[in-house]
Image (cartoon, rainbow, N blue to C red):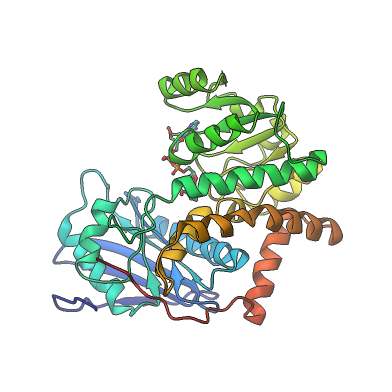
Length: 367
Ligand code: NAD
């Protein structure tokens, strides 16, 4: 049941070719400044997190929300989730300058969209923030309650682990990771969980985090070698797993890479699409980020299935990242294109012909 408790907020639509709907929100009463982008709803309602970040201006926020929402369309399409791509950004410092009133105002706008956009956690946005959004709308997932899918990071990490096995199969003819050296950049929610999977699978680990104490602690736990943030992208390894920030594959870093493959959780790893070609020229296999890191989205998507959240179904679907990646490697080889291009083409094909379009209604199992 919708719980609109206050007046509606006037929305300003921004027309951008290729996007279904871009909504600019400026609520003078609460001070909320936000954007919601629905990129492509062909396969289902748009689901994507709400990023809270102190963007310098509207243009910066718009650039981010456009890029992120498009990525969500591809991610949902390649994973066959019957969802569209969307994202939202709130212009605020998540630690100091976001108020419950702003979050409630944001919730009212989400509610006005009547389920065409569903929000969840993202950078800067926690379960605590979403609690206020939920006061105004049911179109929110990943809240802290017993029917929720909970923390997505362990599921993302498991998907990245299966993706790394797939990359090993493609690169070395075996998915066994014993004796393979894997370097992880970033030991946050995903990187730490990934390190554990890799350790138990027999990999030799190189670990790195801006927080050196954390890197030292995990190095001790997993008999890993610590590498500095300045050196992680050129360290000699079999597979490099970027699990920190985007844009790390670019014309400066690619010539210095000293690995057979790149396969990690970070979003938007390629600074631009052309860098996927540079990777090929340097003989480096690349696991498209929006495919290998889709475990968290897959997990949360099961929360709104009619039968309710089931972690077994989520895990089994995430397992298929292994085969999906092998398919991408084959498409890339057959079509002489980059793996990034192959994954984009696969997603585009599904969008063009409605493959994987949602058949069932979404059900929000809130407490
Ligand atoms: P996080 O914030 O928990 O962890 C990021 C870690 O990277 C932190 O420990 C930080 O200190 C470290 N870091 C930042 N810059 C670094 C640098 N230059 N060198 C070394 N370490 C650095 O984030 P997370 O949830 O683990 O996500 C990691 C990446 O995966 C992000 O790009 C995120 O967008 C992406 N991702 C996460 C999920 C998820 O479920 N959490 C899903 C899909 C994609």
